[in-house]
Image 1 (cartoon, rainbow, N blue to C red):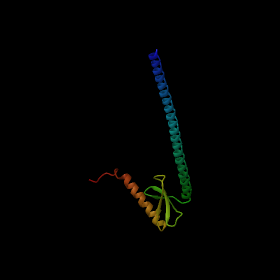
Image 2: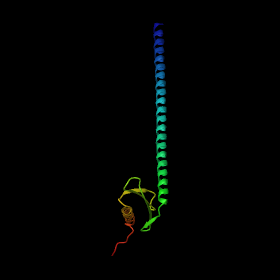
Image 3: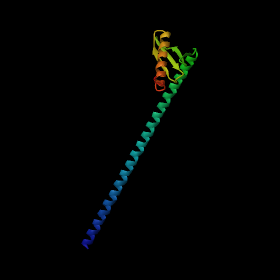
Amino acid sequence: MIQHRRLKRERWQQELQIEEQKWKHELKREVAKRVHDRSAEFHSYTNKAAIDGANLAQHWLRKETIELRRLFLRYEAMKHRGVEYYIAQGVEAGTWKFSTSMNDKIGTLRGKSKQQAVEAVQRTIDKTLDRRNRGLVKPRE
């Protein structure tokens, strides 16, 4: 009978240990789930913030481009080697803004006069066209 009680007590202790291990396991799972949820929330918040920042930057770049295009439309287009370009004086003294029909970028350059700015833009156009046509020219025999 004593041995039977001892066996019962050992089984009961084993069952308690198993129950305790189950309980600890469930606690760990809950903690891991909370951490995962927080991590997912953080990543979605970070992604949303990055997208919002990029959209805002794109909006302001578009707005600035549109405003500069309006400024350029006040001036008559000039041509050099078949490429149309516009030049307008920048806000700061000695700066000039230019736009070409080759791309949508608006460049800034420095020059004392409009003539120097025109020459600089023409050099830029020449360099760009030469780079583009470098592989298309047949070598002389």
